[in-house]
Length: 78
Image (cartoon, rainbow, N blue to C red; front, side, top):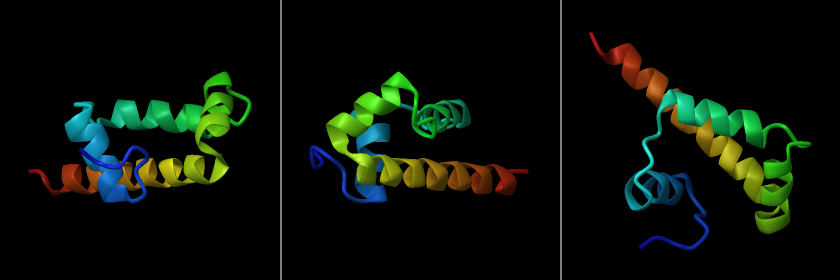
């Protein structure tokens, strides 16, 4: 099992995709980014209260990284 709060992209990816079994689809990533980038969203406010602003920014960065990887993988497929 990974750390309770992931500290790296690799830990986060493993936690989401493997331990939680959540497919990191474009739709999932985009929805999370929409919510976490809207500071006034109730879910974002709760996230910040629980994990802090620095972690929210890490998660946003990791979601963007996952989206870029997905885009890159899709571009390689014939």
